[in-house]
Amino acid sequence: MSNTYGEWLRQRREAAGLTQQELADMAFMTRSHIAHIEAGRRMPSREDARRLDMALGTGDVLTSFLPQEDEAVADYFEAALQLEKQAVMIRESAVTFVPGLLQTKSYAQAVLSTTFPPLSEKERDKRLVTRLKRTKLLDDPVTPAFWALLDEGVLHRLVGGRDVMADQLRHLVHLVESGRVRVHVMPRGTGAYPVMQGMLSLMWFEDQPPVAYSEGIRVAKVHDAPAIVEQLQGAYHLALSDALPLRESLALLNAKAKDYGTDA
Image 1 (spheres, rainbow, N blue to C red):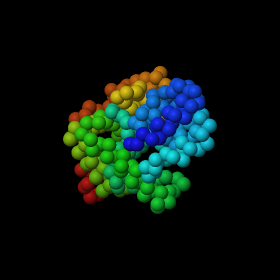
Image 2 (cartoon, rainbow, N blue to C red):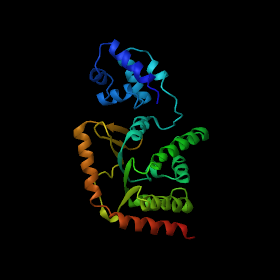
Image 3 (cartoon, helix red, strand yellow):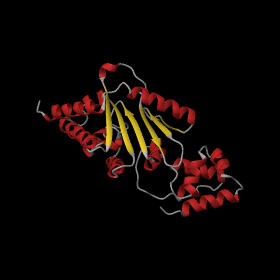
Image 4 (tube, one colour):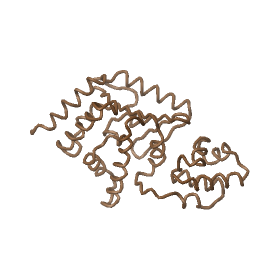
């Protein structure tokens, strides 16, 4: 990644007589995020760039000159997408769909077709390309270490049809058997449990504090306040303690995949 963008930000910050912490406070960001941008290790989301422009009085320069990576995602997911790329460990919980990083192409197509208002075919194709690019993170044999906590309802929800579900669950089985990810299933008989209110992603990094990302219906937030992140980590691990062990979860995934692969 070229560091021209980060160097320009540093020069403008220093010209304004601001420390990294002062700029971070003005732009509602963390100091470590500013440091990563200036060092060329990370690019800001479009919303972050707009806030930096406002804080520095640079018009729309930082926003306009963001490198175009041709990544199409919902606006509220932009910041989480950039963090996801830097994470060395990710733990997610899902109550509705298989997490995006674990989705097959056909499953992702079916999920994107549920968006309302409906996406144009062009926009849907762009988002599909971005989602499939995200799955390439798992091509690395080690990083990020990925755990998924899936509500059992995710396995029973017929997304895209029986063939699509069979292929998706076989993909999860392959990832687990290869040792690349861990998947734990929360049995339907468990009842209410922490983190069942929506999607939660916990991310850890080599050189900055952990963050959390939570998402509901058109509502999403990146949490970096240490106390809140710690609470969300605690809720996740409390829920995980009630989930099926890895071997039992794998057996359930296998059984359900075979069930979908059997003609009704």
